[in-house]
Image 1 (spheres, rainbow, N blue to C red):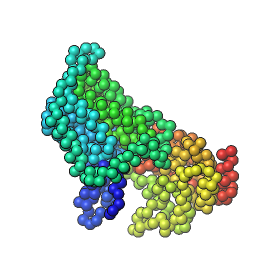
Image 2 (cartoon, helix red, strand yellow):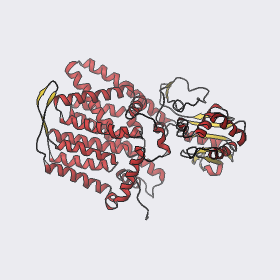
Image 3 (spheres, rainbow, N blue to C red):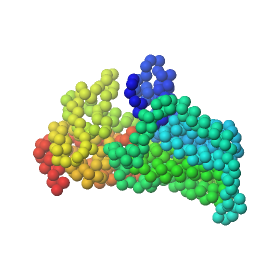
Image 4 (cartoon, helix red, strand yellow):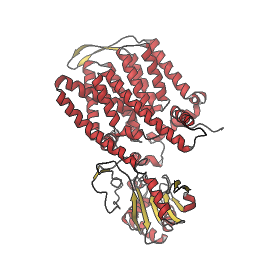
Length: 529
């Protein structure tokens, strides 16, 4: 009470989660029940997105396009993974896709009802995340009636018709009212909301320097997203086909003057040129454009084949696209049958390490072991383990910092790295972190007297074959594992946010030599040179 409401996203998903948790719990909901409710809602939002993708593609093209588009949305790993997370992105994607569907319907056959509902969905989308404010451009284009005349091989002449101003104001009013109803404090007390959105914008653009965003320094705009989509979040066949469909739709819309298709193209383009060019590039940030891409893909595959091919050809092309994508989705879903690596590592610590064991953990990542129930009782880290917390991201990166860090390391029995959140970034910024980068190289090379005792992981797996990421290639660290799991396929580096939440690699280093702080410091200084 009395505290500022600082929340960097819209309030709609938050209110929906709280309401659902209270409905499902006969007593006051616990944190775990809020988590379960949030994840269940994400699954529901994503299921709704599949239906909305079908509706959008059917309205743009025809029913077969809708079925293909919905199938792509159903098996895309980006959607499968985010359906498991209690974040705002699945809800955002649903309302964005519904808004596009209704705007396309209005642009095709103007109806005041579609204008009203489209505006309401725009308001709901903005109520999830301010990014959806960019829907205002497709909304204005939908109401700006353009006709195309004198079509020729290089396009036609555009003529503007009068705007139906009552319908436009109806859409804008619906958007404003829906946003206000689902985000009342953004209207009643706008300063905290605007401050939070502004701060988030600063973080995403790189104007504010946060440790968890430094992984994106030096990454290429837009291309980084596409690379991660091809490697991990969509798979190569679906990524290649989706962007081929984007080019196909742009050519067709320019040639034939298809205003409904232009609405979708504008949304995809503005997202790629704004979100795609920011410093921070979490793969889920492009979740709201994937249904639009799949809608265009459904149109390209069915329209082209319908005109030039046969049913057999169509079936073969769809199989080449959907079979490997579905197999990848099955492999990814199979991963959730096994315990989270943090849970598995925590259970091992409680069962095998004696009370009082000294474990070095890193700030900005979850220290292990987690507090969890085991054998009918709750086990707490603070009563079992001596946690020695270090902050490798701290600055300045000087002799004082590294001496303090090595003091904790020398006094420890284990170093447990919960993920690659820090070691995947700091060695890449050697000019900024000369001492800490040298520390990680020495640790992974065994020069600090620590050896890798064991690892905990789970990977997408199908028929015994695992799909592995390589967290060591970008920081140029030696792989400390003596071997990787058999029958593994290494697909290269993955965005840290893609792995850290549901399948991080946990590395457990045991202090074999127990070198003194002075000996450790000598190793680091020799490396810094």
